[in-house]
Amino acid sequence: MMTVENKKGRFGKFGGQYVPEIVMPVLNQLEEAYEKYRQDPDFLADLRKYYVEYAGRPTLLYYADKLTKHYGGAKIYLKREDLLHTGAHKINNALGQALLAQRMGKKQVIAETGAGQHGVATATVAALFGMKCKVFMGAVDIERQKLNVFRMKLLGAEVVPVTTGTGTLKDATSEAIRYWAAHIDDTHYIIGSAVGPHPYPTMVRDFQSVIGQEIRQQIQQETGGRLDYMIACVGGGSNAIGTFYEFKDDAQVKKFGVEAAGRGPAMGDNAQTLSNPKSRPGVLHGAYSYLAQDEDGQVIEVYSISAGLDYPGVGPEHSMFHEQGVVGYVGINDKEALDAFQLLCRTEGIIPAVESSHALAYLEKLMPSTKPEEVVVVTLSGRGDKDVQQVAKVLGEEI
Image (cartoon, rainbow, N blue to C red; front, top):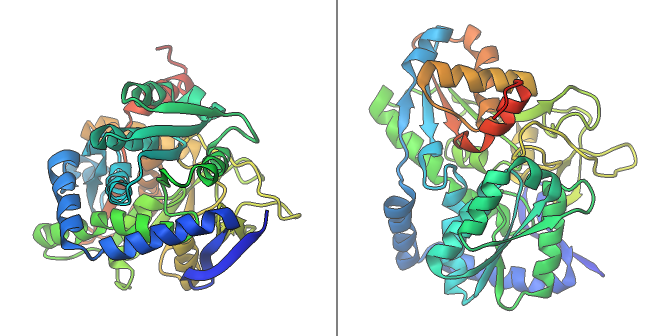
């Protein structure tokens, strides 16, 4: 099957459209529809209505007083995306894309999912808008996220187990693309992160950038606009791009994207792309971006305790931010993330997602060098209900 490479949708040299020819017409159709509706007052009013009345936006910017006292130094604020309907930031993008699919006359939505949060968000919006829904999920992830699998089924979605390759997010994405190529007339593929071929990285970023826009307004009220540091976890990178995009030109705000350093630095023991000096750019899932790959250029199996971070690529805009120095990308290992998970539970009474716990864990490294008048915002991308069983197992507790 011939692959077409297109110059559209570039972030510096990253991004593009590296896809089978059969998918090009539907990408063109999607781009056309998105360009039309992103400026359309009725579409934007509809989206806003669902954000506010259904998802629960704006989310709180919460001053974590006890966590601040625990560390000393800068004031810590948490952007509470965990309080959204379905429990994570994924609903921001799912609502936007479902509304778009509806206006395009599509009858079915499909999605890939790792932790299951994007699958749940997609199944939720499919139920809301009366659409059929299929979710592709790696067999390994199905095993560690049983609660979310059942949630999706309750919402009327069909969960399709993917056993090829490593049975994780990368393989679920490949399978979803294959299915979409064969059902392009009536099906819209809701990609859950800021990855994939153009227009997806732009579209997902735009739907998620409500996070950063709200932070800007809220920090104005809270601190008179003072903001020194921002931290968000990065798998594919949608909550992070949503957090950072609004502040990309604010050089005085230091931004940190936190990747999963897993069990350690050995190849295959982590899911670090931008924070791993050995990573090189390549093509995965229709876009050119940094990838975890071996010396022969094969995309490697990556690992993280968190099902939402074990992706071997990263959104192309993050690759550009990395090369331009707009955002600093760092790694946090499993143990550090689990410690941060427990710390937030005990200090603030908030159970964070294990993904978000990677961002929280970076406070251990950042806070000693901060001053009391400084301000740090951590995006809490999701809640941790889905992870409680897995964390208990790691900590040796039986549930």
